[in-house]
Each structure stands twice: as C-alpha cells, then as structure tokens.
Length: 247
Image (cartoon, rainbow, N blue to C red; front, side):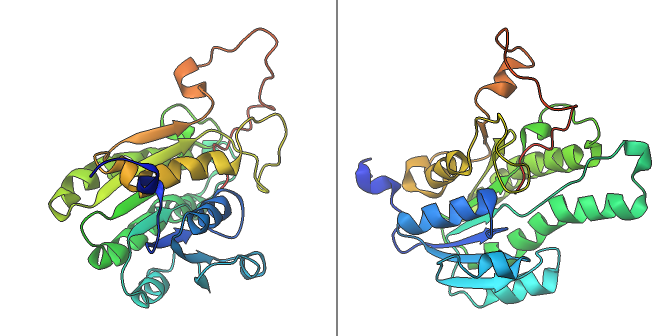
C-alpha cells in the first residue's frame, strides 16, 4: 500500500470508545467520527453521553463484563477498540483499604480485559486495540500507587497481547498522556489537551500505523523524556497531585 492522505482516514471502520462522554474519550470519539469512523460509544454518565453524536451509544459501566459483552455483541464487527474509561483518587497507600484497592484494579485493569475479550472475536485482520494508560505507568505515582501500578500492568498487557494477537494480524498499542485538561482536573497550566491524545489515537487506528504494534506513544509534551528536568521558572505541579490523565 502506498501511503497517502487516504491512509489516515477511518472511513467505514467501526470503532468502540469507552469512557466517551467527556475528556479524552469524547475527543477520540468525535475525532474518529470526523475521520469517517462509525463510532460505538459507551460511558456510565448517561447525561453527558446523550449529546455525543455517534452511531451507537450505551450507558454502560465497563467494569460489568456481561454488560460489555452485550454492548459489543450487538455490533457486526469491531475494527478499532479504544480502552479509555478509568479513574483514580488521591490517597496515601496505607489509607487505601481492600475495597478501594479492588475498585482501582477494576476501574483501570479489569475493564480493559473485559473489553478486549469481547472485541477480539469480532475483529478482522488489520484491527487495532488502543489502551489509554498514563505517564504514571512509567514513573512513580505517590498517593496514586495502585492507579500507577494498574497503568503499568496495562502497558505490559499491551506488549504481551501485541505478540499474542500477531497471528490474528491485530495490533495492540498504548497512549500514555501526562495530565490533560479535562473536566476531571481542569485546565490549569497543563499544556496537553484531549485533542492531542485523539490525534495519536487516529494514527494508531489508521493504516499509517499498519506496522506499529506493542508500543506506547507518550503524549506528554516531553515530560517523560525530561525525567523531572524543567526550564528555570517552569511551573510546578500542585502539591504533588498528579493523577496522570483523567479519562
């Protein structure tokens, strides 16, 4: 295939986007639609989801495996799956009890496995799975330790499944944003915007990335590369409250 402007289009592809009511998920869903995809969006916030213009939508908590299976089961096929839904809260590790820990595991890992298990049997060769992780998957996350650990687990799962699904010609990649201006954390001084992540998702969903699998794209303005270095006078984060990206 010769690469050209057509290579970035998603015309006719069926793309499932979780956590699509706001923030990164909404930007991905809307951008995919502009590039020609037929979007199936889900979110547990029905009010926010109601004004999202997509071909299919469902009020759904993707921690519910049966609900995920039913939602994806109604689709003829799945060409792209974007695992975006997730969340966290700030707390010292010793203050997180078994219930809170399980909630973080389900919110940031189990829901990913639910969606992948439901979608892969409906994927054809050339399919793409995109897991939204976080910069916190690649560095320490004090006060977000379980969240960071789960994002690291998803980053490793991405690599493992990229190899495992190679015989199906299904690509599996991740996007690791730093904090992005979303309703969850506000604009503040963060340079990233949801559309920045959506642009990377379009690349991974399209034929432009047909030979890219098992990798993570860091959409973080160079923060992971900088490893803590910043120009003199650059703003600091507020009191260590760094929840990665809010989906």
